[in-house]
Amino acid sequence: MIMKKYSFRLWAVSLTLIYCCFIACNEAPVNTATDTPTSGTINISVDESFRPVIEAQIKVFESSFPNAKIIAHYKTEAECFRDLYTDSSNRMIIVTRGLTVKESRYYADSLSYSPVSDPIARDAITILVNAASNDTLFSKERLQQQLTGKLKNNQVIVFDGLNATSTVRYAIDSLLNGGQFDSTVVKAVKNSQAVIDFVANNKDAIGFAGISWIGNPEDTAQVNMLKKVKMAYVQCRNCGDSSYVKPSQLGIVTKQYPLVRGLYYILKENYSGLGSGFAQFLKYERGQLIFRRAYLAPMMGFEVRSVKINE
Image 1: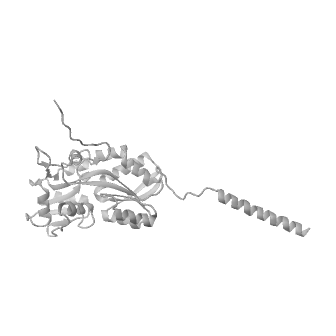
Image 2: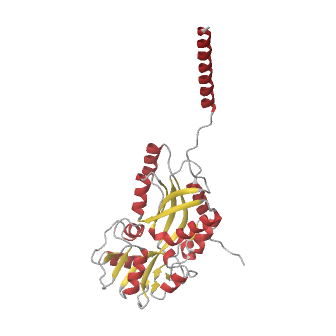
């Protein structure tokens, strides 16, 4: 009798274990993601020179999707890339270039996938002078000579930092062809707003800043700032009747304004999460309209063609 009871219990325990194993094997894997394309919380790093327009993008996105929270950290471009490499909580960066082939291979080796990178807008770098200054005509050659100290005229040139910012990198790559600044001429300040403030308070200063900080005539703060600083004209080599142009959307799209750079997102996300949702928002109609309202050139819906009209 005892043996029968023991055998029955052993049989019951075995049956229970088999049942549990069957349930565990057939149970769907648990999704550990805590966000979707329209909900959750993520951290992103953004090139500080685009802060005004990206703040507008996030405001509209979050108002459209109340369960979404995007925490943006505004930094130099080099710091944004450092976050992408080393910060596991950082989901996206917004910077002025995409990934290089070497960087894509690094991510493919370390993460088993490569982050997605796409252009979302084009930006103009403005040359700012004090509102009282009459020196408003510049060429790339003149800027090169002043930045390297070959042209001495007692003007201070102000950047949003001497190292690691996208504006500094653009000047070194596109104006100096890899050369070096004359440190007695070039001054570094904290950020883009500090560039504008310095030029506003110094008659002989020249500043470099992205157009989203100063070029929006519908932004009251920017309109008021244009009472203290002016956007200078830069020489255009393919303009026909006008040899100097101010930065504008048309000048960016047609490439008549010569100081133009791209804006990209780089997304480190291998599933459909909040980063993917925000990237799609930036790429398509609503996000592109916000770039247009900020007087950057959107990437969507513009095509420039040369045509001949027969009368």
